[in-house]
Length: 401
Image (tube, rainbow, N blue to C red; front, side, top):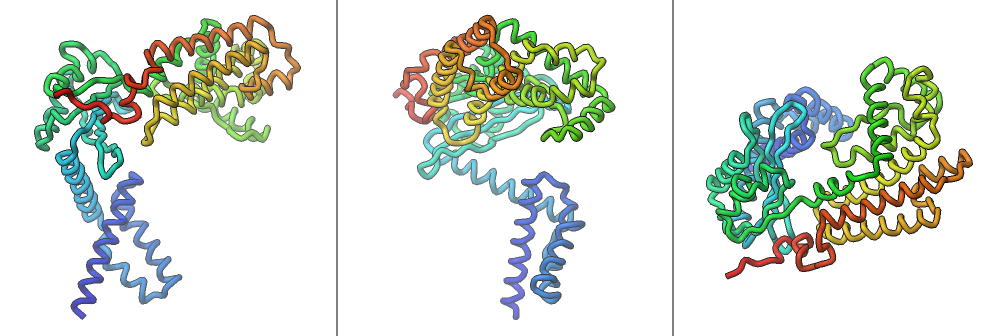
């Protein structure tokens, strides 16, 4: 009997840890375990296995304090395992970024990549809120404190990736420069996703005016709850798939493609809802809508590359090369008056029986040419596999002896 009781206690403890892990991953309040999850599990077990089996659920400890302790224990175990791996691995690389969130807090995030069991793992090394200054010196001190606290070796750091901001890459007081002084074998690199975002910002003035106008339209509608509600009613009556516009922000990588696509989708509903608004003149202007359709399509294509660059997997160099080839192909198609690669634009032209003017096509070609040049500017020597070999494997380069 004692052995059975011990096993039941162990099972109850394990179940408590599992529930705590799920709550932590979902970001839910700790009280949800006792107020909702436990009662739900008891009801399910009672229905499926009987009341006697449901009584065993009471042995699982899911109080608020218990869940907090379990989550802390799990996080401590994960951190200890990460530090153990970093101490035993041969090399590692760091990626850091400091940004201010919606609450106005300056948060520093540092990720570490390292080889483990024939794979490259990526984990969060540290997260810290800077309550005062966010200078390069302060960022370096925070990271160095973490390294010294966990007895890690700067000499194992082979690359430091940042967003290229002045506080990061300043020659004297930049965080990366300070880190390279203590990590003599480390190289520095500019975040691929950040460079991709910068490369796609350039556009002809005519398209920039349309982009700015689209942002003003959305801000005008979203600024008043009544206007947003009226738009929702109209889109429901018209049987549209979406009912709301999306706000635009420069911080989110995918923002331009998403909010332009949604605006182009709801353009007819906007015209019906806001007949007296000044921006209706733009939404009924064929030339303006052609440019909006083109922008929504091209940024959707760019978003696909941005999404593919995120997460684990590598091969970022090949994806950037593929993007350049795609843009070259798009440009060749537009030069031959083929817009089949831009579905929203093509559908709009076909539905309204529009004959595309040469100046519009030349503007699209100029934008695509500008994207080509930007990619080369932000990814110089992209065809050199030696220079960008770290993008395939950040541990390809070995420190000189």
